[in-house]
Length: 324
Ligand code: CP
Image (cartoon, rainbow, N blue to C red; front, top):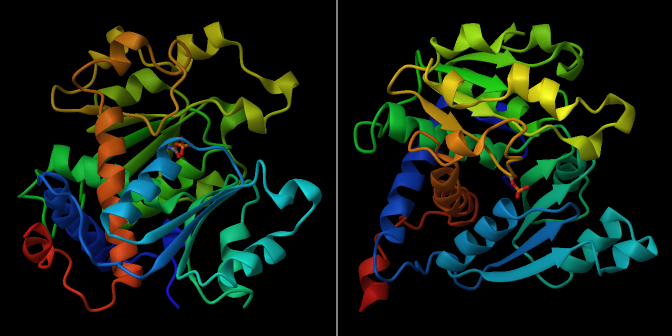
């Protein structure tokens, strides 16, 4: 069985294939009838033990556009609150005949455990585990960068070689940062992390990227600047940075954005905290791709589901039949 657990597991060719397949899926989304029959008769369960808006809804949209049967499970309101384990929850779902499990979990390693334990036969897709990985977020970010920095058509078959990407904020708690560093490195980009020293993980010097503590000096050398939320829910209250001090040193406002090259974009995985890591002026500017990232997430998740479950079916050639 094939799974998607970590962006680090993808080769350059795997990643480019997913990005190219997502471009095909995006063309489907541009059509009046947005559905493909590719996963008809297959069942996908969205197993969310942690809160989510974008990832949960976009996986559901992707599954429905591929005609899969969709089961949504959230830990709140389930028997998890009565103490049921991940193993028993997963086996309960497996007994209902599930082909793929999309899992978000607060514990780093939960999707890996599910994929390798032998508890279930289904394909496992990691939708974010603890501070570890969020591979479909990194893929949708790379898709957005490739479209904006290389071009929608010119980008087909291409990677992000030589592009300079700056990721700013709470690196310590960020699965988005880890996944992006892994994938962007595989795609040939040069990544710089910018964070307060207290929000840099131990061992970061072994990651394939540069580290800086000075946002202002990196902006003029960036093709994309990705802002991250400070994840207070994963911190001891005693370590919360004050909003004013944090935004003064690490927040992106209009004055700082003006230091970026004209072609450079501002990214954010969401949810944003306006006034903390990003001002409303920047979040609402033409250069900010946050909404585009969400739309691209549906195409990326369609591509991942299609490549894991779709077998040898061509990606979009059924569409004409479907439209009749
Ligand atoms: N970017 C992201 O994972 O957002 P959600 O937590 O809303 O899914």
